[in-house]
Length: 439
Image (cartoon, rainbow, N blue to C red; front, side, top):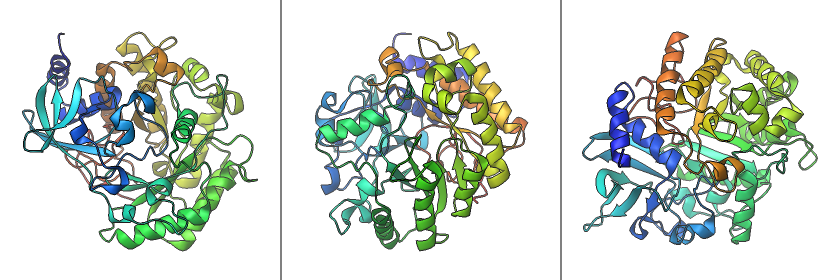
């Protein structure tokens, strides 16, 4: 096919049951988008909420390679509507790629649009600067640095440990740039706190609670790098758990509390529950046994794939199966040099994993892989996985949920095209538009 437009339109025709909005969203997430200077933000001094780099870079270049987008950050997310495809409201996390065929730019009237192959295909909305971002902590730190919000303000993302103790080629997950992202922000002189003080987190949340009068923020996620030893004298469960305990004591019931951590032993998982956490994300990353060993060497070495899965099932006895939501990185199944060579093989493997967990009442979710260039898999696969893989995954995901009588997981806002706010994959956009039963 001669253009990206032709590829996208072919897939929309071949897979009519996948929302057309999800086809564009997956393509933007897997391949990134370029920004005209007219579409960049004025950082924290402007009217647009800027990209916070809340855990990974989610870019197709390092900061020095992004040009003006490294100095004037792009928006955190964009909303697509209208255009020749009559797109319903679609929230997309921004992943910058100056070489992308997609470009966000203002027209002669100053109205932002998304252009593909030079043709305007959608109107673009950008998130307004929230009032709570205009206030600083008593020590001068910004709320955006300590407690940024994503998913159009729905989720407060608390990366309280900005690096990972799986370190080096023999331990780091091969698609993950958390450690490089830390290094590049420090090298650029940007504020990027390695370990966030619990009192800073509480102060930032107080500011959000005070100025978020519409109560748009509904959930928080506590996360960060894996802890194989200790941080500040605490093991992983105690480290992340003590933030949850402090938040729930200060703000009982204000937000849905979620923790992303390793698959921990049942007693450690119980500590999260005892501290008031409502949802647990023990991410399994990739289903295939061989690919898990090759792409997650640290997790294989310290825990092991089989034990990781056993712990996920055990955690359902603590939280209830509906509230255990492990993530996988959609697309690495096809990453060279070890990944599947065909979309059929990759979808079959991923669906096997979905069926395994969903047969136990556990509903995984996924993040669309962004091949960051400082990671081994990003270097070897700069184009990521084929768009067809991502579209067929959406189809397989929804079908598997229906097979096991499951509905959209809690803590992600409303499902359905035109309604979903989850921004780093289209799984919520592709589910039936019905209100989920939040925890």
